[in-house]
Length: 286
Image (cartoon, rainbow, N blue to C red):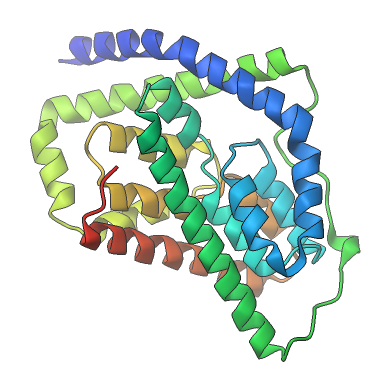
């Protein structure tokens, strides 16, 4: 069984590799050409920030959620805009779905749901904050801004960055896929899927916790579990909504208000869980 799981993992990985590299090559090109422009758009968006924040956040640009954390620490963008970016950020989900040659319409539906939730949550949060402050604006805190995005994507050339990303994610996917193949082989795919699907509330709760892990691991695990049929659409979305890449990690470093950071984390988790449960209850599938 171990040998079969290993061979299946290697064969699937070899098929995946060229698509994964091409996807990252395109993404690196977009990031090098438009990354700074996206941040500028968010800076100038004001109270409409959740709109561009959610749309730009869904593009898996390395460090974009970290940039949003820095901008919020300096109060250049609103809290609602920060949430719009965090909730719409897909991290490694998009390149994995593309490299697995998932139906483009399915991918667009998943992204549309994330953008919609991020936008709605962002506008609602900003509305409640403005109401609480009677319309007054919070002053800028430029001294707290930081330019370290913790991704080092722009230190090299596009090809080198794409190769680096591809190798890291490819090896991680191989590891996760091997473990999944083993688990499914020993347990049985039907039994494993039935165990999770039989607990419609527990699935999103656990998946959202996984999503809070501040690196690519969470999005890779959640996406792979969904593709294997182990996670439901609601559970996957719960985890991907609460996941913000390294955004939360950077927020805790650059924003001095620890209580606020904890509150943001808890609210992000809550939105992910509630959205995931609602998606499961409505029977939405992708």
